[in-house]
Length: 81
Image (cartoon, rainbow, N blue to C red):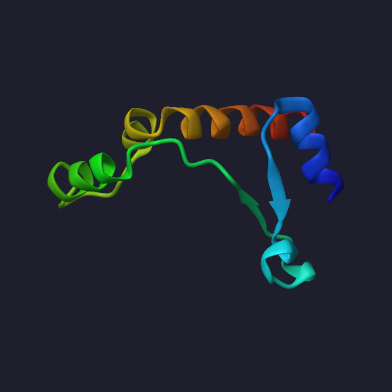
């Protein structure tokens, strides 16, 4: 829980420990709550443009830019620890 509080305080990104969602505390999992993209549009693009390839960073950046930004900020923040 301390990690979640520190991340929120320092980056503005909200995260909850996995045990709040029924996971075992020793798993050390967490969930980020951020859904702000057009899922139908992303699914359509994934089924056409990415039919034969893996979804990549460019896909996330294009179809879920705030999610991409959150992960970049988290990566930077974790790099300072």
